[in-house]
Image 1 (cartoon, rainbow, N blue to C red):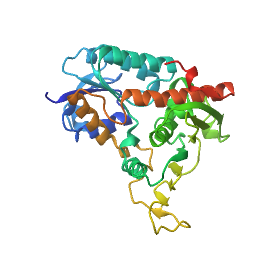
Image 2: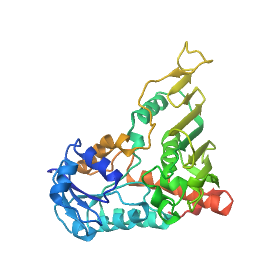
Image 3: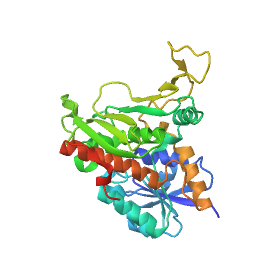
Image 4: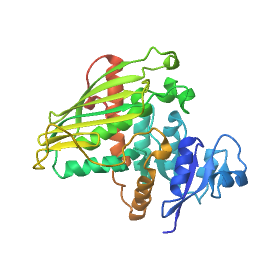
Length: 346
């Protein structure tokens, strides 16, 4: 099989990061872009450092037989419809999170992907980071024993100083604090806990600071998760905080604990329990998409298409389950009650 050609829809800052990433991915090339604005192809090639065919009509790009993969980098409410259309056109899909703003739309995306037999990757790229790889290594080596409590929190103030603010403040675009950003933290907790969530309880609040008043939804949420085996977790998503970006991870197990990149483990004789020991790694410490680990994720996706099997870590079904928990959490906050995952019919 020759190289796969990738067409990107949406030309914002996420698309720019994807274009740069694919220059280092073996077996695939960005060859086309689709934007509502007209672009001179020569100028695009100069700006992006690679030849690109420019479309203003998404349907025209889908009809191009030389485009094999559609990479969706548009604002959130367009993801579901574009992913469904791409799958129906027989194209593999890369979907920036979230998959959809509404649960029923996410299910429609899943059904289209399954029906048309295409491959899909959802951009929960943090699973491919050095930080998360290190944490999984610690877990898999048994250094924490059985994890019974985990706390993963996302703190990233998305105010007027941030590129997506103008559309992110709208409920029909951002959706919720979890959907627009904090889903990375919730997905991380599920990645570390290895289990099925049975019930969630979530509470929402918001900052009174003037920069966050335009938001049409509450900008901070706290979600408690109960797993089927009785273990528990907690996820905070705060997009109205005034502080440096912080992806907080605290895992508590029967043999030790991990705090961000620090550890104590009873499985390592000689460790001093009164002080944390540091595990040097590259932390997830920025909301800038140019810093996100897209390259190993996209390489794994392209390689999996060649093998004809689902990609590891961020395949569609895995990401769909993370979204199902997000939708349950937002339902809990909206209705002021615990929500069982079984209420969200698959």
